[in-house]
Image (cartoon, rainbow, N blue to C red; front, top):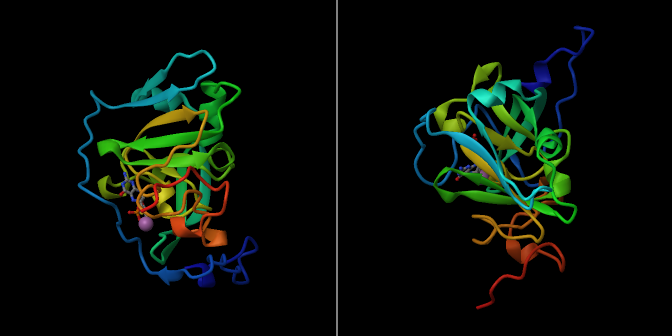
Length: 215
Ligand SMILES: Nc1nc2c(c(=O)[nH]1)N[C@H]1C(S)=C(S)[C@@H](COP(=O)(O)O)O[C@H]1N2
Ligand SMILES: [Mo]
Protein backbone atom coordinates (compact mmCIF):
# COMPACT_ATOMS: atom_id res chain seq x y z
CA UNK A 1 0.00 0.00 0.00
CA UNK A 2 1.14 3.53 -0.63
CA UNK A 3 1.06 4.51 3.02
CA UNK A 4 3.62 2.01 4.26
CA UNK A 5 6.02 2.13 1.34
CA UNK A 6 9.50 3.49 1.94
CA UNK A 7 10.90 6.33 -0.07
CA UNK A 8 14.13 6.12 -2.05
CA UNK A 9 16.16 6.74 1.11
CA UNK A 10 14.47 3.75 2.71
CA UNK A 11 13.63 5.57 5.91
CA UNK A 12 10.43 7.56 5.70
CA UNK A 13 7.02 6.67 4.31
CA UNK A 14 6.34 8.07 0.85
CA UNK A 15 3.21 10.11 0.30
CA UNK A 16 0.44 8.01 -1.26
CA UNK A 17 -0.80 9.27 -4.60
CA UNK A 18 -4.02 11.20 -4.24
CA UNK A 19 -7.04 9.60 -5.92
CA UNK A 20 -9.50 11.54 -8.07
CA UNK A 21 -12.57 13.23 -6.57
CA UNK A 22 -15.50 10.92 -5.81
CA UNK A 23 -13.42 7.73 -6.05
CA UNK A 24 -13.05 5.18 -3.25
CA UNK A 25 -9.97 3.12 -2.68
CA UNK A 26 -10.44 -0.63 -3.06
CA UNK A 27 -8.06 -3.33 -1.88
CA UNK A 28 -6.68 -5.77 -4.40
CA UNK A 29 -7.54 -5.61 -8.05
CA UNK A 30 -11.15 -6.28 -8.97
CA UNK A 31 -11.94 -7.59 -12.44
CA UNK A 32 -14.43 -5.47 -14.30
CA UNK A 33 -15.61 -5.71 -17.89
CA UNK A 34 -18.58 -6.35 -20.10
CA UNK A 35 -18.94 -9.78 -21.73
CA UNK A 36 -16.75 -12.90 -21.72
CA UNK A 37 -12.95 -13.23 -21.39
CA UNK A 38 -11.55 -14.08 -24.83
CA UNK A 39 -9.22 -17.03 -25.34
CA UNK A 40 -5.80 -16.09 -26.73
CA UNK A 41 -4.94 -17.90 -29.97
CA UNK A 42 -1.40 -16.78 -30.87
CA UNK A 43 -1.59 -18.04 -34.46
CA UNK A 44 -4.62 -15.86 -35.13
CA UNK A 45 -3.71 -12.88 -32.99
CA UNK A 46 -2.41 -9.62 -34.40
CA UNK A 47 -2.36 -5.95 -33.53
CA UNK A 48 -3.58 -3.78 -36.38
CA UNK A 49 -3.06 -0.06 -36.95
CA UNK A 50 -5.48 1.19 -39.56
CA UNK A 51 -7.58 4.18 -40.60
CA UNK A 52 -5.95 7.49 -41.51
CA UNK A 53 -2.30 6.45 -41.59
CA UNK A 54 0.14 8.80 -43.36
CA UNK A 55 0.69 6.33 -46.21
CA UNK A 56 -2.88 5.05 -46.33
CA UNK A 57 -1.61 1.53 -45.62
CA UNK A 58 -2.49 -0.41 -42.51
CA UNK A 59 0.16 -2.07 -40.40
CA UNK A 60 -0.04 -5.31 -38.45
CA UNK A 61 2.19 -6.84 -35.83
CA UNK A 62 2.04 -10.47 -34.82
CA UNK A 63 2.46 -11.32 -31.15
CA UNK A 64 6.15 -12.15 -31.76
CA UNK A 65 6.68 -8.85 -33.59
CA UNK A 66 5.81 -6.97 -30.41
CA UNK A 67 9.01 -8.10 -28.71
CA UNK A 68 11.12 -5.71 -30.82
CA UNK A 69 9.05 -2.64 -29.91
CA UNK A 70 10.25 -0.16 -27.27
CA UNK A 71 9.19 -0.77 -23.67
CA UNK A 72 8.57 1.31 -20.60
CA UNK A 73 7.26 0.99 -17.04
CA UNK A 74 4.50 3.13 -15.55
CA UNK A 75 3.19 2.94 -11.97
CA UNK A 76 -0.38 4.16 -11.76
CA UNK A 77 -3.82 3.69 -10.24
CA UNK A 78 -6.90 2.47 -12.11
CA UNK A 79 -10.15 4.40 -11.68
CA UNK A 80 -13.44 2.78 -12.63
CA UNK A 81 -16.09 5.39 -13.46
CA UNK A 82 -18.51 3.62 -11.10
CA UNK A 83 -16.25 4.57 -8.15
CA UNK A 84 -13.61 1.99 -7.26
CA UNK A 85 -9.93 2.90 -7.60
CA UNK A 86 -7.35 0.11 -7.34
CA UNK A 87 -3.87 1.37 -6.63
CA UNK A 88 -0.17 0.83 -7.30
CA UNK A 89 -0.29 -1.02 -10.59
CA UNK A 90 3.13 -1.42 -12.18
CA UNK A 91 2.48 -1.65 -15.87
CA UNK A 92 5.13 -2.65 -18.41
CA UNK A 93 4.62 -2.36 -22.12
CA UNK A 94 4.90 -0.34 -25.29
CA UNK A 95 4.51 3.42 -24.97
CA UNK A 96 1.49 4.40 -27.06
CA UNK A 97 3.50 7.26 -28.54
CA UNK A 98 5.82 4.65 -30.10
CA UNK A 99 2.90 3.35 -32.17
CA UNK A 100 2.53 6.80 -33.72
CA UNK A 101 6.27 6.96 -34.44
CA UNK A 102 6.29 3.53 -36.07
CA UNK A 103 3.06 4.02 -38.02
CA UNK A 104 2.75 7.77 -38.60
CA UNK A 105 -0.77 9.16 -38.77
CA UNK A 106 -2.01 11.45 -41.52
CA UNK A 107 -1.62 15.12 -40.55
CA UNK A 108 -5.34 15.59 -39.92
CA UNK A 109 -5.68 12.76 -37.36
CA UNK A 110 -7.25 14.10 -34.14
CA UNK A 111 -8.40 10.96 -32.29
CA UNK A 112 -7.86 7.23 -32.14
CA UNK A 113 -10.25 4.36 -31.56
CA UNK A 114 -8.75 1.58 -29.46
CA UNK A 115 -10.43 -1.67 -30.50
CA UNK A 116 -10.60 -4.82 -28.38
CA UNK A 117 -11.92 -8.34 -28.91
CA UNK A 118 -15.68 -8.66 -29.48
CA UNK A 119 -16.00 -5.11 -30.78
CA UNK A 120 -15.36 -3.27 -27.50
CA UNK A 121 -13.88 0.12 -28.34
CA UNK A 122 -12.83 3.35 -26.65
CA UNK A 123 -12.18 6.63 -28.42
CA UNK A 124 -9.34 8.88 -27.27
CA UNK A 125 -8.11 12.31 -28.14
CA UNK A 126 -4.67 12.08 -29.74
CA UNK A 127 -3.19 14.04 -26.82
CA UNK A 128 -4.58 11.51 -24.30
CA UNK A 129 -3.21 8.62 -26.35
CA UNK A 130 0.27 10.15 -26.59
CA UNK A 131 0.85 11.12 -22.94
CA UNK A 132 3.97 9.36 -21.60
CA UNK A 133 1.82 7.38 -19.12
CA UNK A 134 -0.31 5.78 -21.85
CA UNK A 135 0.95 2.35 -22.79
CA UNK A 136 0.03 -0.90 -24.45
CA UNK A 137 0.70 -3.13 -21.48
CA UNK A 138 1.89 -6.72 -21.70
CA UNK A 139 2.90 -7.11 -18.03
CA UNK A 140 1.63 -6.15 -14.59
CA UNK A 141 3.80 -6.21 -11.45
CA UNK A 142 6.46 -8.13 -13.37
CA UNK A 143 4.18 -10.90 -14.68
CA UNK A 144 2.37 -11.27 -17.99
CA UNK A 145 -1.18 -9.96 -17.74
CA UNK A 146 -3.70 -12.53 -16.62
CA UNK A 147 -6.51 -13.46 -19.01
CA UNK A 148 -9.15 -11.56 -17.05
CA UNK A 149 -7.02 -8.40 -16.90
CA UNK A 150 -6.39 -8.33 -20.64
CA UNK A 151 -3.75 -10.85 -21.74
CA UNK A 152 -1.93 -10.57 -24.08
CA UNK A 153 -2.25 -6.80 -24.48
CA UNK A 154 -4.28 -4.00 -22.99
CA UNK A 155 -4.25 -0.27 -23.30
CA UNK A 156 -3.63 1.69 -20.09
CA UNK A 157 -4.55 5.39 -19.94
CA UNK A 158 -4.11 6.19 -16.24
CA UNK A 159 -5.57 9.70 -16.14
CA UNK A 160 -8.86 8.63 -17.74
CA UNK A 161 -11.56 6.36 -16.30
CA UNK A 162 -11.03 2.63 -16.77
CA UNK A 163 -13.39 2.27 -19.72
CA UNK A 164 -10.75 4.11 -21.78
CA UNK A 165 -8.28 1.27 -21.06
CA UNK A 166 -9.47 -1.62 -23.25
CA UNK A 167 -8.35 -5.08 -22.28
CA UNK A 168 -7.61 -7.61 -25.08
CA UNK A 169 -6.52 -4.81 -27.39
CA UNK A 170 -6.51 -5.73 -31.09
CA UNK A 171 -6.33 -2.52 -33.08
CA UNK A 172 -5.70 1.20 -33.13
CA UNK A 173 -7.73 3.14 -35.65
CA UNK A 174 -6.59 6.64 -36.63
CA UNK A 175 -9.53 9.03 -36.86
CA UNK A 176 -9.80 12.41 -38.58
CA UNK A 177 -13.04 13.10 -36.68
CA UNK A 178 -14.11 11.93 -33.25
CA UNK A 179 -16.42 8.94 -32.97
CA UNK A 180 -17.88 7.42 -29.79
CA UNK A 181 -16.72 4.07 -28.48
CA UNK A 182 -18.70 1.42 -26.61
CA UNK A 183 -19.44 3.16 -23.29
CA UNK A 184 -19.22 6.63 -24.81
CA UNK A 185 -22.38 5.93 -26.77
CA UNK A 186 -24.06 4.35 -23.74
CA UNK A 187 -24.15 7.28 -21.35
CA UNK A 188 -20.51 7.64 -20.33
CA UNK A 189 -18.45 10.75 -20.86
CA UNK A 190 -16.69 11.09 -24.19
CA UNK A 191 -13.44 12.36 -22.65
CA UNK A 192 -13.52 10.65 -19.21
CA UNK A 193 -10.86 12.68 -17.38
CA UNK A 194 -11.01 11.18 -13.88
CA UNK A 195 -9.44 14.30 -12.34
CA UNK A 196 -12.25 16.43 -13.78
CA UNK A 197 -14.82 13.79 -12.76
CA UNK A 198 -16.13 13.45 -16.31
CA UNK A 199 -18.21 10.31 -15.72
CA UNK A 200 -21.43 10.68 -17.70
CA UNK A 201 -22.33 12.01 -21.10
CA UNK A 202 -24.88 14.42 -19.62
CA UNK A 203 -21.94 16.32 -18.11
CA UNK A 204 -20.41 16.94 -21.53
CA UNK A 205 -19.87 20.52 -22.59
CA UNK A 206 -20.04 21.85 -26.14
CA UNK A 207 -17.01 20.45 -27.96
CA UNK A 208 -16.41 17.50 -25.61
CA UNK A 209 -17.75 15.01 -28.12
CA UNK A 210 -19.89 14.16 -31.12
CA UNK A 211 -23.55 15.07 -30.68
CA UNK A 212 -25.61 12.32 -29.06
CA UNK A 213 -29.03 11.42 -30.37
CA UNK A 214 -31.66 13.15 -28.23
CA UNK A 215 -34.81 11.44 -27.11
N1 LIG B 1 -12.31 -5.21 -23.69
C1 LIG B 1 -12.76 -4.56 -22.60
N2 LIG B 1 -11.91 -3.80 -21.91
C2 LIG B 1 -12.33 -3.15 -20.81
C3 LIG B 1 -13.68 -3.24 -20.38
C4 LIG B 1 -14.55 -4.07 -21.13
O1 LIG B 1 -15.76 -4.20 -20.82
N3 LIG B 1 -14.05 -4.72 -22.23
N4 LIG B 1 -14.07 -2.56 -19.24
C5 LIG B 1 -13.27 -1.40 -18.86
C6 LIG B 1 -13.58 -0.89 -17.53
S1 LIG B 1 -15.10 -0.12 -17.34
C7 LIG B 1 -12.69 -0.91 -16.50
S2 LIG B 1 -12.99 -0.13 -15.04
C8 LIG B 1 -11.40 -1.64 -16.63
C9 LIG B 1 -11.21 -2.59 -15.48
O2 LIG B 1 -9.96 -3.24 -15.62
P1 LIG B 1 -9.60 -4.46 -14.65
O3 LIG B 1 -10.64 -5.52 -14.85
O4 LIG B 1 -8.24 -4.88 -15.08
O5 LIG B 1 -9.65 -3.94 -13.25
O6 LIG B 1 -11.33 -2.36 -17.84
C10 LIG B 1 -11.77 -1.65 -18.97
N5 LIG B 1 -11.44 -2.38 -20.14
MO1 LIG C 1 -15.15 0.70 -15.21
